[in-house]
Image 1 (cartoon, helix red, strand yellow):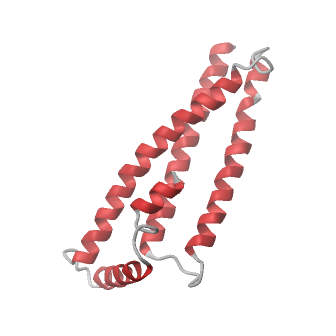
Image 2: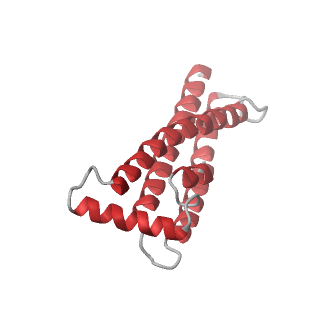
Length: 152
């Protein structure tokens, strides 16, 4: 998810010079409200592709998380009672929250490597990843809650 969105957003697929030039031209066009400027249009297209790709990847990852956490709910240890089945939910929140925080730190370190500032492409990448992580959490948590309610 992280790597594919970075590629879609141009964070890793564009050379550093291309990125610098594109971001500088985008900032200049945005300040002057030149929405027909090629750099502005290119960044807008990247935003659209990143949103579409992020949504698709979030759903793929969300369904994988449903399979993982739902499968754990059906394990011998957790299917004893509704209460033990419910214990999977805080476990999932803690594990996935730790994973999300770890990838956020890695993204921050990568994005702010030398200049300590986010360029527009990095902002798109970061925003889409955060949105995807929220969608993933919503998918697996809602499924696990419904499983507990069905079991009760």
